[in-house]
Amino acid sequence: MTQDVWVFIEQEEGTITDVSLELLSKGRSLGDELGGRVCALLLGHRIDHLAQTAIHQGADVVLLADHPELARYRTLPYARVATDLVRERQPAIFLLGATPTGRDLAPRIASAVRAGLTADCTELKIGSFTHRGETYEQLLYQIRPAFGGNVVATIVNPHMHPQMATVRPGVMRRGEPDTARRGAVERIAPQFAPGDLALQVLERQMWPPLCDLTGASIVVAGGAGVGSRENFQRLYELARVLGGEVGASRAAVDAGFVEPERQVGQTGVTVRPRLYIACGISGAVQHRAGMDQAGTIIAINSDPNAPIFDIAHYKIVGDLNQVIPQMIRSYRENAK
Ligand code: FAD
Image 1 (cartoon, protein in one colour):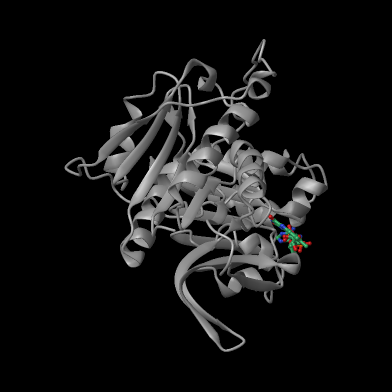
Image 2: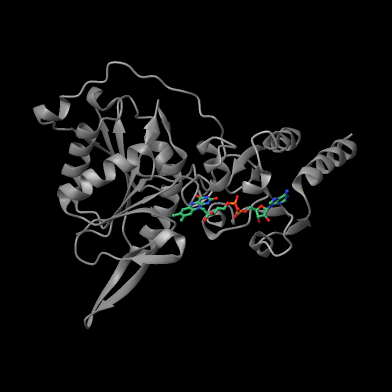
């Protein structure tokens, strides 16, 4: 086994997804600690131009498989190429985004090479582990909430490598690209078995995303305390005035006040805006997991003991139906 850290580079229509760039930054720091190389696994067709992006983001080597059959993601051809390479090159660590593609591909590879896989990690570190008198050095600590978010579990895999993990978009911090970085591009000639290509994609329909919460610099989020879909209009107005996006707690989504795509938290999206305004949100640990990295947090809650106030920088105790219109009025007056 090598000490190499691999990152699967997910690309869509010739653009690398944000989560892959975030994982390259994380992979870089893990690779430096292990003394191994960071390898970007880039599959697709006519994607040569993406190799330099991966190198600038931290890759030492790009394993580039360019083939018409890899033009669009399909489980079997992608799993074939990745699995063959993992078997041959023996990376220590393999990271993938916890996107629909990553969640499909990662277990295929893990089961084929009999590796462990931890989904939706929120932190990755290098450390040692002692079990029955034996110490294993330089393992990947795969850290994630477990048992409904009540426990933060550290999972290690001393025996079956690579140590595989998926990470949701927005969880890892993306470093600045370094355009002076140099790396190697190694071309891979994919070999498919006939059955790998049995499935053909005849048509593809793409819907534009409802919102871009992970990229938003201001998020106005509402919880069960907002009370109704109609009351949520106040949050949309505040978000519009401030130039932000509307997010929500799971309770607000479950109540049908907003679409599931707007859910922030452990089972929603992770956001890192400059400003997060939590309206009628109690501050459960599962919600905080998705927003506690925000630069400034303003909480509006009628309960002065709401746990959200423990992490808020500015605390407004009151009825959000009165506070939000006042905020909008005051912003409009002062912004003139
Ligand atoms: P509540 O806890 O009901 O809080 C409503 C708040 O509104 C209260 O604090 C109340 O004082 C306040 N309020 C009421 N009326 C007003 C008013 N007029 N003005 C001002 N304040 C008012 N939750 C998430 O959000 N995201 C997740 O990703 C997520 N994942 C989960 C995963 C698991 C495995 C589990 C078990 C739970 C998860 N949850 C998640 C649910 C989480 O535990 C909480 O139940 C949820 O976050 C509560 O949402 P809330 O704060 O909107 O509702």
